[in-house]
Length: 350
Length: 100
Image 1 (cartoon, chains in turn red, blue):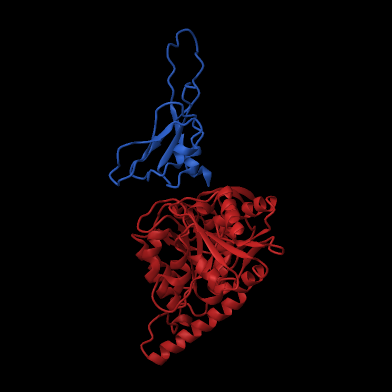
Image 2 (cartoon, rainbow over the protein chains, first blue to last red; image 1 turned 90 degrees about the horizontal axis):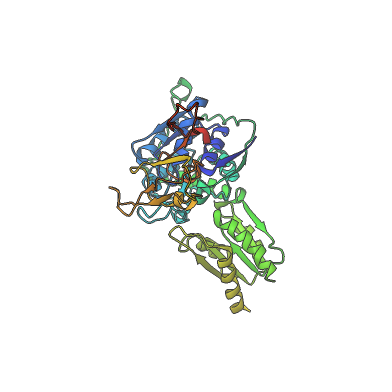
């Protein structure tokens, strides 16, 4: 069924179709509609919605439900995610699957409620303590808000690790057509969970390993699954990269402005291409290398002062000059603005 | 064009963060940000008091659930007879979860 839907609401609809039955969160603009829709829909499908007293409480409720083997999620924006970082480290350390949605807004501090992409470091590099990774997916449309939330649940369970849907106030707030699957996914059996049954009585969910060797072994095991994820899970979208001289790189809402910029530049006679990572961790390194193999220049565009650009530089490792253009504070660059950026930079390059 | 208002907007000052999206989106431009600060330090939106058509676009674009309520004014009842000297307008329910 095709419907007009807000990005934040699509997240909840996707989650329910993925078999998620627990939502614990605290409302925050521009992610409040996630809590609002969860409060509306979760009870209708026999799920649980709790508005916690804070994000710290919410993430620990997520920990509890995940330990009991339930598909569970929370959603917030920058300030709330800062509070959740401790819990996310514990979830990763205890190898518990969950999905956290970050609808990024302007920061630091309270910032504002307009879209930014400034939580990239916090989510992709890990804002919590210890050696851990979040699986991070970056939707660019309302449709993907639902689809990638469903994928996030699948990956979280596959790797027993928190997965983050990293989006921005723009994608969260906008309304677009949404087509939902007509069937629901049955969550997998989780024999490791603590369900209060005699069979699961011996199971233990913990992130504490006081013996040094024991903790090292635990971390090596986590590392091994991260390596597996890095090999199997990178996803990206490329457009007109085959003959591109300049490669534009951006994720989320920026990638859509970049797509129009590519078309506009082609009309100007500049062979431009687009690379859009869908998984921010694991980063699609090989795919980016391939897309950039013949270009003279790479321009990374973000709604930040330069965060993902570091991963692009690491991936390309000096093979191609990587430049950066960012807007912050909730401003989104226009196609004309980006067109001019590319034209000036390419004029210098030639 | 100042005509008979067909709707009314109320803004919950406790919820509004003064982002201005409703002001921007309102077709008849009947919303504004107040110059005074709210207790939270924002300039909340308010209805200027005229020209609202009850379209609800401000409601749909508001990122703050519960901050905006749009009322549509029922069409005036047709005068029954010469005895009908006045017809009252009444406010009809808010637009809420219908959007979901």
